[in-house]
Image 1 (tube, rainbow, N blue to C red):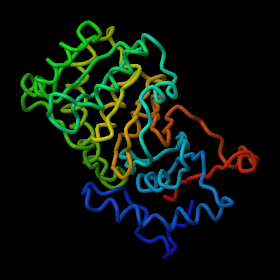
Image 2 (image 1 turned 180 degrees about the horizontal axis):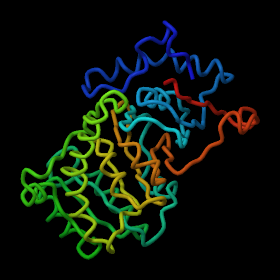
Image 3 (image 1 turned 90 degrees about the horizontal axis):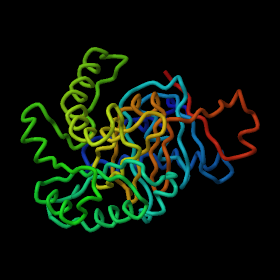
Image 4 (image 1 turned 120 degrees about the vertical axis):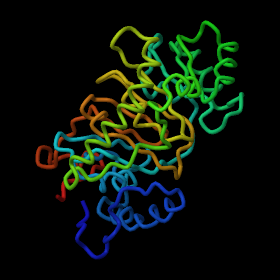
Length: 310
């Protein structure tokens, strides 16, 4: 890990701001880290990273990752609120399903109409058709009731269930929130009570209401095997919480380039869930060796350890 106390890196290690107008500048500030990482690794970026640091380090670690690389978590991970900027072009939904080792008959939750309220979501229909070809048991959350009716007419008995955010808001009223991203958690080491209260409110008003509405389509107590996410929204934190433990995975196929995403880290690494993206994977079920445990790691594959600094 680069020395964060160096004047060269001052102000670089931060979580990604919520304001989209600041994302490009945040990314540009990290290019010095990317180039230094290449210099230290023989001109290459790392394919494997083990994260055990603080919240402000995770997004820079993701930025340093080579295309197709993987980030794993160690048991000493600190922090709750992880952010990163997406990268890379889109891949076909079928290819991403194969990459995630999707099996016929697995349950899938899909978001339809994430970027607008139009009845026809062309990318969404392409993904649903791919899921049907692969034998998925499909559940859908749409933005509007019009979209839900359209999908029920189009796919009929192919769906195990369908609902809309409009319907959930209508039923839950003020008990349901659907934020544009994971709420900004206060630093737990400095403001533990405030952080815990924010997390609890998020779970009570966002995660649990949606969980109740969509898991009634599944056997009691189960989460989904896979959630096919949409690049145009930041609901990754919710999706991770809706997955089965240890085998559940989130999959993206659309281009994520330059967009901010966020998630609650314990839901990922404590339950061994994974996130598959066209150009990277975040693996909550991994247990990569430390540098001290495996001195041969550097010679066998490009790797770069991210260590605690506090």
